[in-house]
Structures are given as C-alpha cells and as structure tokens.
Image 1 (cartoon, rainbow, N blue to C red):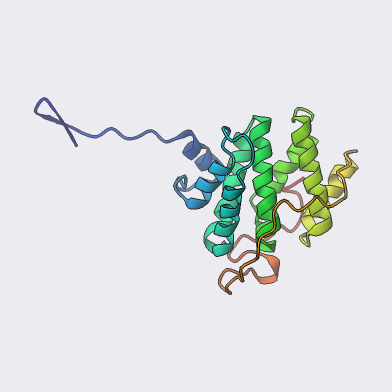
Image 2: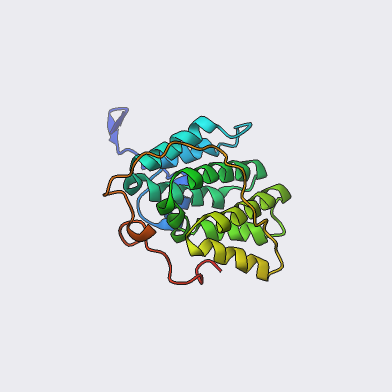
Length: 211
C-alpha cells in the first residue's frame, strides 16, 4: 500500500510482460518467465549477441540433463515461444544454434518433446516458407535432414519425406557436431520409458499435427 497525502491508495496491478502474454496465449497456465529454462533460452537468443554464446548454450544443456523431468519440457516450450516471436534472421539463427546443441546433447526424451510441443512443426513451416530468410531456411533444412538420418524418432523422417513430396530437398547428410558434452547418467525418475517423456506427453500417433 502507498500513502499519498495522508490517504491510502491501493497498489496498482502490474501489467503482464509481452513474453508472459505470448506464453499464456500459446500454452495457457501461469507465467513462467522466471523459470531457469526460460531465462537461459532468452539469454541464448538475445538479439544483442553478436554470435552464439556457447557458455549459455552449454548451461542450457546442463540444466536439461540435470533433470529432464523438471526442465526438459519448459526448455522446449521456451524455444517455441522464441521461434514464434522472432522475425530477425540473426535471432532465428541463434535459436537454431541453441536448439541444435540441445538436440545433440540432451537425448531422445528431448527429441520427443520437440515433436510433442510443436517445435518441429514450427521448423517445418520455416522450411517451406518462401518469405523466410535464405540463410535461416537453409540451416533449418540442414537440421531436418541431419535429424532424419540420426534420430530414432520416426516423425523426423516423416517430416523430411513430407518436404521432399513438396519438391523441397533437405540435405540428407549429417551436420558437423556443434559442441559435444559428456552425458551425465539420467536417474530413473527422469528417464523416459520407451523413448517418450514421462507423463501425458507421449508422441502423436500420426503426423497430422505436424503436417
């Protein structure tokens, strides 16, 4: 409460940040902008970075690997928010670099979550968009081609085949490793049975949500 000239004025409600508003419109639920995963993703994709900050990207991978159950889903959701916000090709490139590091270092539960939370679908939209910056689109297609070769989650190969059916030819080669970390052992509580995250975040039965 604030006293003004001997009177008491009720505190004014704080206006939600644009980030919180976008998060709520996409996922519903409470604002998680103070969550460590969201903070690190925002730092990794800051428009004022001249180039990717590998220390932040490594810290993000460490966070996910420390407890996928606590931070894996939030990290993927934060990537989706940033993808939907970004219009600057430089920022889009930072997002893809940080995501690529997590994909390489955080294991199959992370790969599955990228599908279930719609990040793969957003990447496919960039891959088919003629309005997308040429460099960003090329990197998206390179990543999709690499993941189609490397990953055991079938949706990546299905997205690759879908792009080819539309006359788009993602390179079907493996990109150089961006940064390889020692993988800490996952505890049983964090490990995903049969390659899927625990809980109700199972893979879709088909690719209708992606295509």
